[in-house]
Image 1 (cartoon, helix red, strand yellow):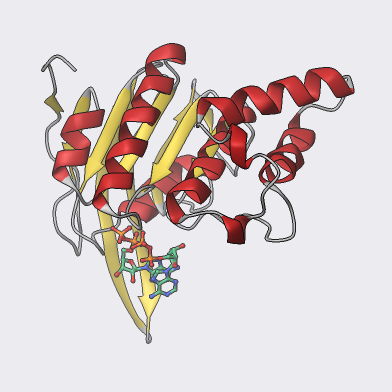
Image 2 (image 1 turned 90 degrees about the horizontal axis):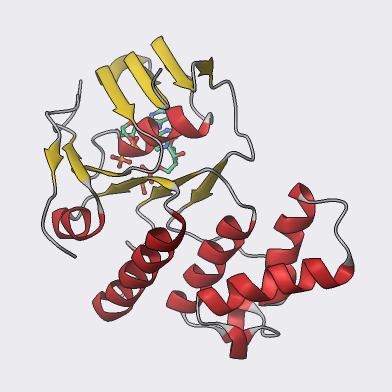
Length: 228
Ligand code: ADP
Ligand code: ADP
């Protein structure tokens, strides 16, 4: 049985009274532990596609399943990382992550909770910024908080939608390397959406092109076998 699978999915949107099909005949089969990148132009339908997997968008046709069960909405098994990090401005780094952790893990001791959160803060190199608020951080640091927050919820699958798109090139490079290091430690399943072919090839095991829309569809997979 497939781990994460999209079969014959399509999606159209109504815009100004006109219906246009954004995605057509999308088929995708992802194994557990794989790191897959989907590359395509802005506006091609990448967010729509990854949101089939997050459960935030329902496909008009076909099926979207995790271990054979239909995905019908968001769930704690799938962590999301977006371009805009949506941190709460009145909470510190620690508190922003704690808020997310508390939603998932209810019966932890105060010590276990603190250790867990501090471990993820250290993983993204933010220990010295632990008690700072978002406005005191750079864009790269805020995105690190957002990565740590999602990872600390311990999702089996990480869905990343243009996660580093808003960062300057140097910071983007740092975050790509750090994310890879974290992935190499725990081998979570990752789906990365990007409009940057270099980022896709650098990070993923397998790169899949999404053709330009409308009626965008996935091309054949390109396995990436270069040593990292
Ligand atoms: P990408 O992530 O590749 O930029 P999106 O999936 O965000 O692409 O959008 C693909 C196309 O679908 C765009 O033309 C966008 O304007 C349109 N679209 C996306 N979401 C909606 C929506 N909820 N309603 C109407 N049109 C939408
Ligand atoms: P991206 O940065 O991935 O290209 P967009 O800016 O296209 O994302 O879209 C951001 C959000 O707005 C998505 O949830 C998308 O579904 C929604 N959206 C995009 N275009 C439209 C539209 N024309 N009408 C309504 N919602 C839209």
